[in-house]
Image (cartoon, rainbow, N blue to C red; front, top):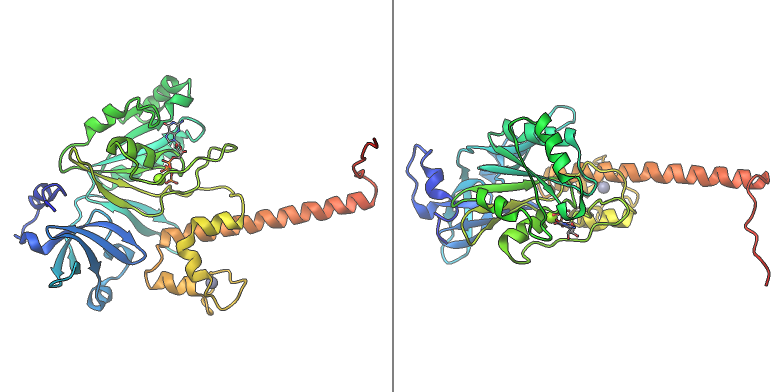
Length: 350
Ligand SMILES: Nc1nc2c(ncn2[C@@H]2O[C@H](COP(=O)(O)OP(=O)(O)OP(=O)(O)O)[C@@H](O)[C@H]2O)c(=O)[nH]1
Ligand SMILES: [Mg+2]
Ligand SMILES: [Zn+2]
């Protein structure tokens, strides 16, 4: 693998030390505490050792997609020990509210952030503002893509609206489906530059990545018709090399969600967490108290992303709430029906 393609030549200019090519790699995938690295020796499995973990004081001290890391390759194996994370010249993070505010890194060493919203119902100015703030805070340049222009008649109007509020930020209406505006997007991605796609689930981030790649590389999924919400198809962040030069990072939709269809849908979307949930001591484990909870243990061990865990809990919680409400409603309905307020359906006899 050519390190120049991965952006090394550009990145190393900011480094004070001189590192041999065989001792660096770029983090391409971070998945449940495992890492896929792109290096001069090809694709390597990145391994983190106890020493590294002991010196890490928080989540952000672990390698993230986009990071350049110092490695020691194991002889005759496609594996390498990750020794150190090289300085991040930019990063995209979000703040997680908890007891204290913790930082979660989405990707690092990024030049451009494409903030994607769908013109079919996902459009929301204040959310755009938050994304733009997030990009600027991490030293990344934001560009807004209003996707699914094939479904909208008011694209021009929305663009004006965005421009009047987010002054100076570039906005484009695009359609990953029919290709409109894709050339303009492609023009922003140049050799050795890394761009990341962010936005809610179902807005078409992976479809845009596919359109740029010109092939079906990233799995995408049909959006449910009722509410234009996606189903969280992309489950991990991944660094993708564009054959024409440049690097793309597709991300799973950020979950600012309302309700989903069912607990099954949750299980499916969070299969990485369900693996651990099935091993919990109690069947009805809430996964918020540590007594015999394997989910919390996996979280502690870094096998589950904090971000994933948070959305999982949030979502399970809102489902319980929904269910309780539904049960209450049906209990009330039964009461009313007993009082004769609700008529039983009458069937017409033939
Ligand atoms: N009509 C129309 N549909 C689109 C367009 N772009 C994407 N879609 C559809 O929107 C759905 C969701 O697309 P994805 O690319 O999976 O969305 P995503 O943002 O990657 O979603 P997550 O991976 O869940 O975060 C798919 O059915 C796509 O075919 C577009 O420009 N026009
Ligand atoms: Mg996706
Ligand atoms: Zn549990």
